[in-house]
Length: 136
Image 1 (tube, rainbow, N blue to C red):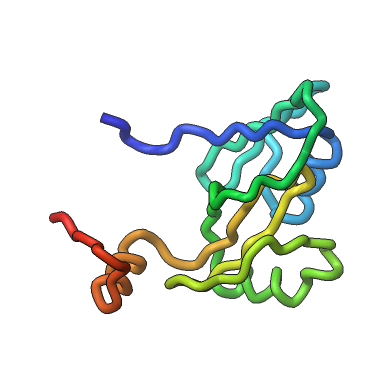
Image 2 (cartoon, helix red, strand yellow):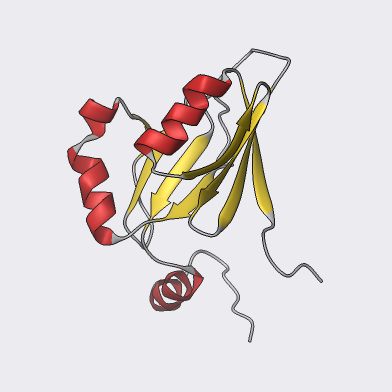
């Protein structure tokens, strides 16, 4: 049985640019950095940045993304500072839990999110998605 998410590894086109984005704009804690990678902490999540050989960084059209928990105060701060931080949005929030959907320098889709699976299930029990089934 899987017991949790161990780490998240993102392929990046420029270590310095991505390291700066995650440490300075998203306030991740740097653990280590080398020529082709970096280790960071996003809260308790181990985040790895790995230099990719293919420098094609097209935006994917699917919904695959990585969601990070933030406090309501921090989300408000990010919203107020979108332009100064030069954050690019990829979607508007339409679900439970306030969120901000941004792109990193390599166009990885990120979500800064308030809430958790418990608040999401509580909301969807009140207003279920089409053909939604709940399990104990």
